[in-house]
Length: 231
Image 1: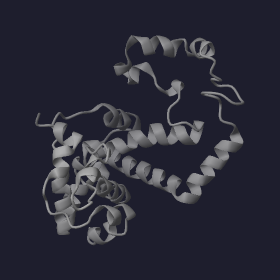
Image 2 (image 1 turned 90 degrees about the vertical axis):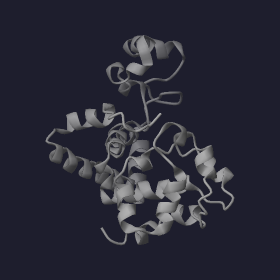
Image 3 (image 1 turned 120 degrees about the horizontal axis):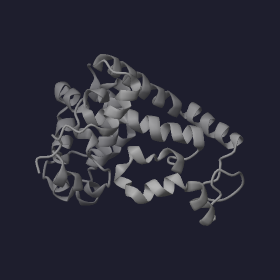
Image 4 (image 1 turned 180 degrees about the vertical axis):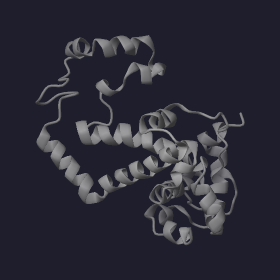
């Protein structure tokens, strides 16, 4: 696991985000995630800046890099124009490239994002569509959404959307030519390869855990060890 720092430095987010951190802690003071999670962007910047390979590998395997909401409040306050949120982007990408994201509970949620959002984009042309927001998977939506989901054809007809229909309009069915073009963009830009890599590493982790992919998905989607905050 050598040369992680060297690989990290190739990421444009790293190049644009780290400008000699002096460890003042202003980023931590303004950070919303630091208020709720065991998360300190000052420590993130310091760890990366020290170029300690062991510490960097530990960070890439941790839940820590997945707590950031990337609101970029840190960028607005740093006296040296550092952007810990941008550093986090680079760390996440490297963790995904190396498969280290499967070492942490929050990191493994990348599979849920790939399976839900990634597949939705490629299959439907949308990040989210009403058909896939199933009430049993989204209890936080409450009974109102359960009713809407059950009567969605009628509801969306009354709201004058073009739900599941061809042509223009909200929630329209994306035509096959557009979907083919979208998939081609993902293929050419490396997006498809990236999603396949998330899948492959996740399959390997599920095998290590001794569970099938359906239960692994439920694990990534619902499990919470309760250790992410000291509050």
